[in-house]
Length: 404
Image 1 (tube, rainbow, N blue to C red):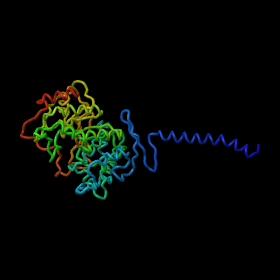
Image 2: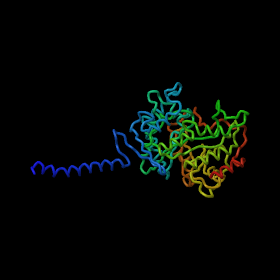
Image 3: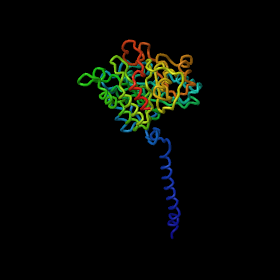
């Protein structure tokens, strides 16, 4: 055998081993929690037994950045920023938030929450952004930067996650308005839960409740509308949850006690509670407006995944809602003021009653302060001065208790 052949016989096994090792290393890398491809980190989000891998860009080039094809389709449902009249007057504060000008304020809020023992709190940041009633609305983005909400969200989340001792979670809450959220979805790496607010009001022609041909209130038509609204309807939320692997939170849901009088709709209660159970969703009933009698303590079995919220919520109201449902609620929805920046003196008044109350908090946090001219909106006025209590509707109470 020539010396050349001897060398080849020696080298060949070494080359085979090297090829096998390279392949093994490549496979191992693909199963890591994150990897980098063209500067884009890949993050795997897992909820229950499902997992979705989403690629997210470090900078926001569009609302659909880092989306799968299914997510992109869902995000683009409804009117978008290119439609006439979509973009309103630009919010200078939203633009500033997108640039990171307020990061120190959110860092300070994070420090306060950790100091108060609320390091595991869920933050409902910049809620209902696809509506037009908040300063942080995606409609207030400049035409040159239609993804300003995305940029602001990412600035805030990265800042608050940098606070020592924090374990904050963030819920991204839209509203069923028929308005696309492609320019407000920040990407799976920046969101822990997805949410929508669902009420048994409005929705028919000209902003009224649907009615049958005979003029009666049409609860079935309204429920179909709640299911099929895009984006933000329950079918849409279920599909988006599957696509992203994110658990659903409904920070506000409830009956209508307003001027068109649809107070008593047990079908809505039954359907909502069945839907939330079927989709492992967390739901906070809107207990504001004096509709629930307060209770000094919480008692009974723990009602997992249920809670109560209100603009000016108290533990007594959540206790009362739990008592009405036949147990102790797990969650409470609490709101920082919409019209001012965070400060220890203001925020501690909101947070202090909850520190020993035993509830997991979902804290609504404004992305930027609303001007005083923009009022916090909770629907049209209730008729007269009658104090309507859920307890006055025994069929509704029965539906709540049976669902729980």
